[in-house]
Length: 120
Ligand code: SF4
Image (cartoon, rainbow, N blue to C red; front, side):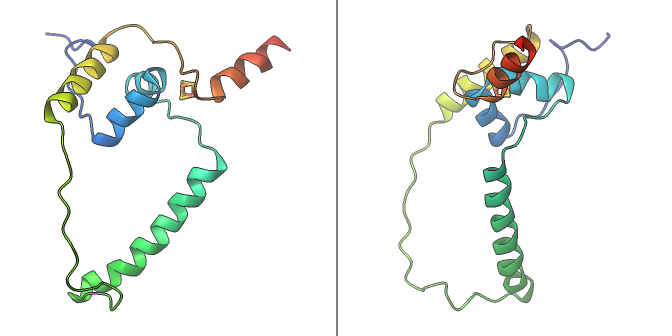
């Protein structure tokens, strides 16, 4: 049987489903056309800091040691989870992928900027 968008197997990570919730069009473009979302300067700054901190703490992990800044007696908090809600988002994302390209999000300025450039 030939593979179609409706039968294609895809892996949807939590971050990919977050992208779906933020903008179904970017989600659709990334998974169906391999076109990734444009990045602004701020996400790259925070991801750079995240990488530096991760590398720093990874040196302790490789030694099997805890960083001296990790306090003992840390309180453990329960985090509420919503497996049914996550499943519904997964199913909705799956259906979006099999359909036509959805509209862009009003919350993101990139597509609006591109439309304004084309109108000039
Ligand atoms: S509005 Fe456009 S650029 Fe912004 S997230 Fe959606 S598809 Fe991507």
